[in-house]
Length: 163
Image (cartoon, rainbow, N blue to C red):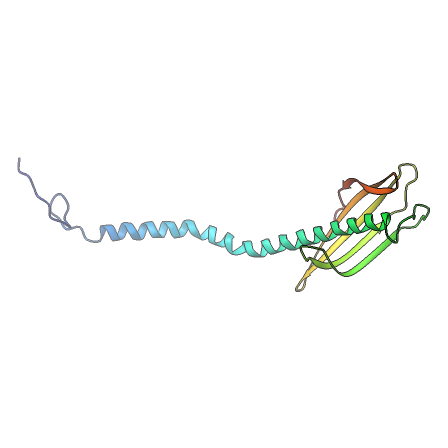
C-alpha cells in the first residue's frame, strides 16, 4: 500500500482545493446576516417605544403627584374643612413640575364630596405630558379615608377605561 502525500491546498487524492474555505466563510456570514435582520428591525423600533413608555410613566408620576397635592390641600391647605361641601372640588395646574425628577406637564385633580357614612373621599388625578405633537395622559384614582384629623390613602382604584 502506497502512501499518497498531500501538499498544502490539495485534498487526499492530490486534487487542488480552491476557495473551499472562502465559500464556507461566505455561507456562514450570509446565514448570520439572515438571522440578524429580524433582531436589527426590532432594535430600530425600540427607541420610539421606549420614549413613549417614559412619557406614559412621567404622566403617571404627575398624576400621583396630584393625589399628594390633594391630600396636602385637604389636611393643611385650601380644601381643609370641606367635609360639608356637597359639590365636587377641582384644581387645574398648567405647567406643573414634580420635585426631584423635574417632570413638567399639566395636572387636573378632582375631589368628590365627603361621604359621611364611610368617612371617605374619592380623588381622581390626571397628568398630561407633551412631547412635540404627542400628548401622553394617565389617570389615577384613590380613596382617601379621614382618620383622626387627617386624610390618608385608603386604597388605589383602577381608573375608568380611556375612550
